Every structure is written in structure tokens, then in C-alpha cells.
Image 1 (cartoon, rainbow, N blue to C red):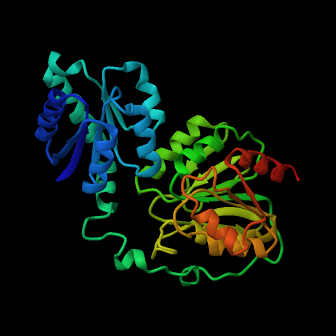
Image 2: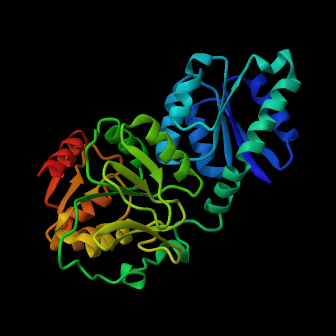
Amino acid sequence: MYEVIVIDDSRLMQKMLSDMINRLEDYHVIDVASDAYEARTLIKKHEPDFVTIDINMPKMDGVTFLKNLMRLHPMPAVVVSTDVSQHHQVFDDGAVGFIKKKDIGENDDIFFKRMEDIMLRLTFLVQRYHDKKPSNKRRISSELDRVKNHPDTLLLSRPARKPGEKIVVIGTSTGGIETLITIFKELKPPLPPILITLHIPYGFSSSFAQRLDRLSTLDICEAKDGQDVKPSHVYLAPGNQHMLLERISNKYKIKLLDGARISRHKPSVDIMFRSVNNATGSSAMGIMLTGMGDDGVIGLKDMHDSGAYTIAQDEATSIVYGMPCKAFEIGAVNKVVPLYDVVKEIEEFAQK
């Protein structure tokens, strides 16, 4: 049974939405919220599989809440609102569906059919989130989260003897969604290939890659095993596999690996950074953006010690100054820069 939280400031609408969603097979409304702040508390408490969001709410509008949700705790969300002017915006902000409120009351069957259609189309996405989300019995104190598997358990450090073609690699976690959007809205070709590992639930990596692709002049996709790596193309690691770079006959290819979490994550930034150092050494650029924890620190130090150019986002512009801070503290970073300078750094690296 998939658990849903309904977010709407109208008590009547909360009841109507709850009654209709409860009619759907395999879906159950676990709680309701009247504003974004109440919703935030309930989401932390229940870890729902799905939420509905109204746009016009007190304290914080639904579009702002949706952006924050997708940045800090991405999950399937359907916007239910009378404000059709925001229809396209909410999809850009990460919503997976939109339903007009006027369909409710005029004809409840139309609304029910609309919701049912959305659920049928998105069952795979909700299922993936349901399978991957942490349960109340498996919090941060669990064995899985406490054990930090070293990159050596999956990929040994064998730095490239000869540098290859230029490549840019980016690692990020908490706050990474909005940060990457900010960067890729501004980047313009020609550029070296760019690889990204973002800590994001399985099922969301594909839709986020598509969203980035719509917003950018670069070609952006979710990475596939064996894929050729091309200039001015961007490859996002799938949410359930490690992404590596391989160099075969002086050509770059993507390699995807299953296996244990490394540095508590799969995909792991450490594994991507290390693979790039093994493939191309000093001709790479490594970028550590906002994120919680220390994934990527070991791999970025590998790159730095091989002569690659490495930068980290500064504290002032980071949502969470964890990963960039740890990288700086161990001497893995050539330069600390604010978010608004990252684009310039990439373009200057490409032109050198």
C-alpha cells in the first residue's frame, strides 16, 4: 500500500482529495497538511510515497514548496490547483502531474479518472521510490548507513600515466538539484564532456536528466552502460548504479556498476572521481558542489594529486557545506568558488 500526504489549505478539499485517492487501488492517504510547514513536518514523520500539493497556500506557496521538496527530499508529487497559469512551471520544478481543481465538484468522476490515469502512468516511479525510501526501522543509525565502504573495495586507484582528452566531473548531494539547474542553464557549448553523480533516488535520475536537458543548450541524458562519451554532452549517473569512465583506445565510454554502496552511496561520487583519475589523470576537472557527508573526498584527492584541476563550492552558496568542506580540509581542492563562478571556471578550463 502506497502512502500519500494531501497538502491543501481547504479542509473540504483535503477530505475530497483523501476520499478519492483512497478509492484508488494500492493508495492510502496517511495524513493531511494545511500549509508547507505542516507538510514538511509530516513528510519527515511519515516518509510518504507520494504527495499532492496545492499552489495557493498560506505561509509558503505551493511552487516554492515544490522546489524545496525536490531539492531536499525529492519524491513523486502531483499539483492539484485552480491556478492553471503555473501548469508548465510546476513540471519544470519537478512535479509529475497536474490536475485542475475545477474538475473536482463539477464532476468527481472526471477528477477520479484523471488521478487514476496519473497513477497508472507513474506506478513504476512510485514503486521505485517506495522500494528505495528509508523505513522508520532503518534510519541513519542502521548498519547500512554507518559503514563507509572505501572505494578500494570496488575500484583500486591506478592513475593514468598519460593524460587523455579533457573531461569535467561533478559530484553533489543535498541541494544539488537546484544547484545543477543554475549551472546548466548558463553553460554553453563547445565544452568537454561532463559527468555528474548526484545522490538522487532511483527513478528520479531519468526524469531529472530530461528536465536538465530541456533547460540547457547542452545534450543531457541519464547515462547508459557502454555509451560513448562526447564533447558538449552531459551524463547523469542512474540513481541505483555507480557510474565510471573508461578509456578505450583513447576514446571515453561509460561503465555502470552495481554492487555495494561506496562512501555510503550508490551512485558514489568517490567511484566516479577515481575512475576519471584512472582514465585521464591530469587532463580532468573535478568539481565538488553542495552536499551532506564526505562522499567524493577520496576520489577528488586522487584527482588533485595527479594534477587535475579541482574546485569546491564555497560555504556561503552551498545548501549544505559538507562535501565541499571535507574536500577542502584534506587538501583536495585547488580553489574554492561561489556557485555563480562555477560556470566561468568550467568555460575557462575548456578554453585552456
